Length: 338
Length: 279
Image (cartoon, rainbow over all chains, first blue to last red; front, side):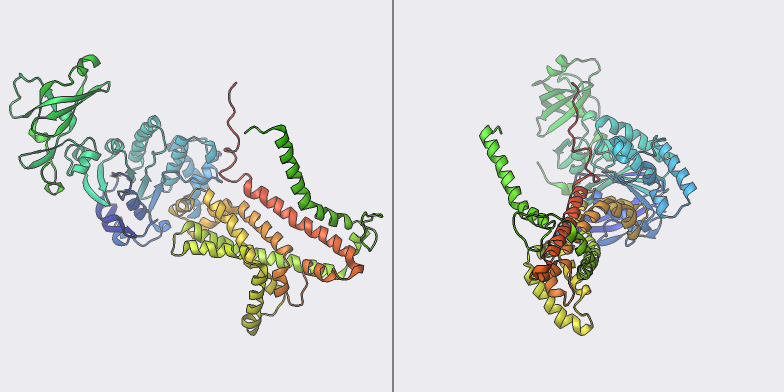
């Protein structure tokens, strides 16, 4: 039985359809990410699972029980908010104990469990501080401890790392993932950062305009995007139209070869001109205009080349090639010819 | 902007004149409270504090004071409950007519007191008295509550807007029902705002006269007693003492309320002082 099952979920704000008949199934213990740009409906979906918004249509089941109409305090889920929403007048310890306190867990047990939770997020000894005395990263950990101390069936995380700087964010990504493995709670994670989604998730649901366009493991979503939107949002959109098909190829799957060289048997080969070259340190990004129409981005690792060598490629005629199985056909309904 | 010395002098003079303009009459009445004679003549010749004792032992003054305090407490209590509920509804929920509601709650401040008074009198006489509500302390409380609600409402709303918007969601998410959320999360956030709003409401009620005239019936509050006694020359010194008392009872809560509302709330504190730079 899935931990979370969402069927036909719809939410409208006046004329705007924020969430449009979404179906999702999330397995127990899964790290499930809802990825999409702002306004795509991912946060509204999360808020409906939490109980902050009531759906206009559809149902939400948690562990088989329909909770669609239950208030937040009667649902076996907890939320980590984007701005943490720590109670400013309480100490860290009181914040973490809050969920247990309102459920009348005895004081001794409450204290012990809160201390364990703080230890898990590496904040042991910070219990007596006020949230205002903590750094952003520490507040984030308190918010996490405050949620997992209740041992919820499902933990909802609403862009929890959004307010942190890059380095801290990457560190917290690793930590979140290891905490999730340790506690075994199902995580439903909302983010607009595709890299974050690809690194952390077991499965990703890509949201666009209130709909789910694709659900699958990171590699499937990245390497075989099912729509032009996903090709562009998760990575770079390399869409070309050939012989009535529209498809995309990931830039690092494409090879650049000299004009005279022997083509690999079975590979798709096309001539083109290098329009632009960007040296990015570990790799180089080439923009190649194809003779048969369309432009592709190509990434190549700088294995032996230096910046002066790669920059010389600008304006050169050459060939691009890739294996046909790297092509991902995009839904025909997405558009006709270019 | 850099002003010339003359401009600066001129502005300071202006500020001085303004303050003098506002406070001189109050100063005069305060001095008269210490006038030994029954008749008022400037300058005061003989000083005395004997009228304080006389006023303190005056039966009708004591009774009026009791009425004023009770009316103030009653109106403040109603204002605290209704003002808090209204502000929470406005701040937390988007509903149809939200703007209209905001306007409607604030309007009584702009309405002339005499209109409010007349309207209340008509309502009490024609609607409430057949139901058994007679003119008296209860009707004063109702009348005062109509304008006291506004100050509580404004104070609480300002605080709600300043606190992080989703603390109540976080509380509900952690399993607290609405009452627990109010008790453990919202009330601690609002405590000083409620105190400030309550003090202001009490001060407003304590010196109110126009609405009181229309709702009091035969009962006298301190301002009504003062107004009624003003025309009896022999009791004028007592009126002056009571006036000084009313000034103090009105000013102190306003001063405290201002410190509470603007002071060390939740969000403040750290932002007010600029960061110190290393030399």
